Length: 248
Image (cartoon, rainbow, N blue to C red; front, side):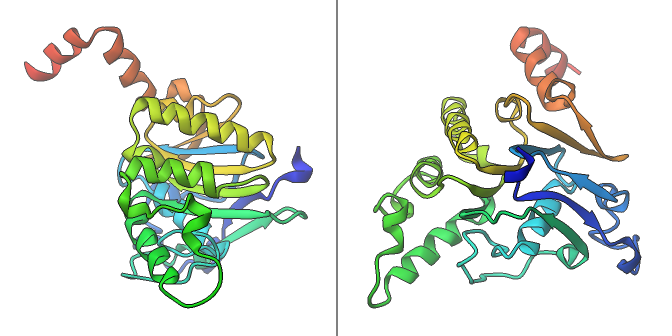
């Protein structure tokens, strides 16, 4: 299993950080970061908004050569420079075998990636880029449809896939569809690192779940996350929880 792992761990080069009092190094998840081991197949980053999970995932992606706004490593565009300098201070341990395919998904900038695909296809010669995504413009589909098309048509075996909140446009049923496709790709030798709020996704068997919080990063079971507990308690008795919430 380890022989086929593409990324083993990431580490913060702490001696190169000038100050831990400024962003993004002031984030508890970064401030306390030393070395973070990644699962050979699926690793989840979980935490509240602003906890640093997306910031760390983005830094990992950029340090591996992916475009900061998303896409494969062949994408090279930018609509607005917004990523932090964290990637400059990461040391990433990669396996001997290289990944055959790779993609960095950012839910917030997926629109920009779809636009870039259309721009590339306006040029002369060569096969159309959109043909690798099912042949239909991603702008002509809903956000959820286009993301699932990405997973089913573009993602392939032995790939490294970094996904930032992929559930953002997916219904619960579509999240299960994405989970099924993720499992197919894992069985074909792929590795995933996913930042998510979805209890459905983080329930994937044998995955490692890292919780980002005020004390830094810690590895937990999916059932120990607030996301899982809140969803379970709400579904067990929605009337009681709504009464407590709305009458408080």
